[in-house]
Length: 370
Ligand SMILES: Cc1ncc(COP(=O)(O)O)c(C=O)c1O
Image (tube, rainbow, N blue to C red; front, side, top):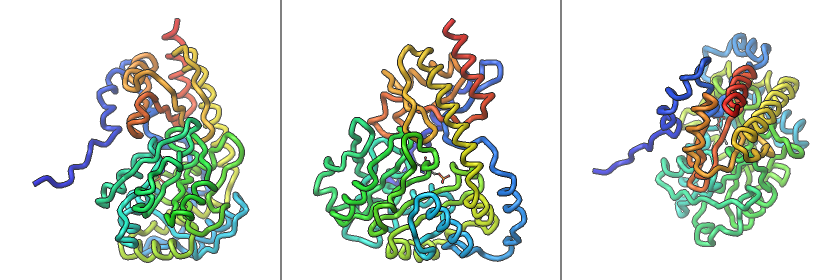
């Protein structure tokens, strides 16, 4: 019998480097997983503990107040009107990403393919695998946008879903969301746009695919990165009336429910922009600091990304660079192959740790050069 065997979780493969990084006074500074460490706003935590929503089941699609808050945020942030009925809650975006192919394939049984960016967040591919479907990576152009023209017409004809992610993890590249929406409409393929890093757009303004119209597209958002609420697990999707309504209904049957206190916290967070501005400054300062220090340490210029909070560094050998950073900087980072074979000659550095920990890595690397 040869059933499904889950592959090793990428970050578990870094464990052998922990003793090397731990040899530094002050220990390992973990810049591998993109998990926030900075605090959420105090009033958001107050809302989490005072909603009085613990007793009853929360509505799977999201409470009216939560969906209204998401609607307000989309209108304020992007100047796009989406009826609250066309918004649904998610338990953070990862579960949505990883389960979506099952529901989309059931909706269109004659199709079997998920298209996704070749260098990307691993759950796009894993979701397709978990659904028993075909994951087909779409290669990137040199500027990081998806090369939509490279999609074979046979793959387009089999696809029931195209993922786009902008700003992208791990590259930080900004994709052309209008082009992705057009491609989807021309090929009859729904386009899902993962926009969880949109608040951390450094080059121009943050964009949503919903600016291209709602037909055939769904934007996926999360409070995890925007408001440092990854531990609370709340996000939402919004867009095409028919797609959203279908997913709301399926997800009710699965029991996908965001706890009421988490929805209350999300409302407070979505209504506030000040904490996002503060977080933007933190990430931007850390990106600039580490890009400078790593450039000096390695002798090769490290680019600052167009968006998100990762340095995506071109290197000769991802694992070798990762090990040298553990040795010289006491930092744990991610070899680019975690995000697809095309990432093998890159390393991703997540600038998520508090300022003093990032500064510690900078100090270690500066003294390793001397
Ligand atoms: C591109 C992308 N999408 C989705 C997620 C999932 O985030 P969450 O489930 O916390 O919303 C992440 C997390 O790192 C990510 O990088």
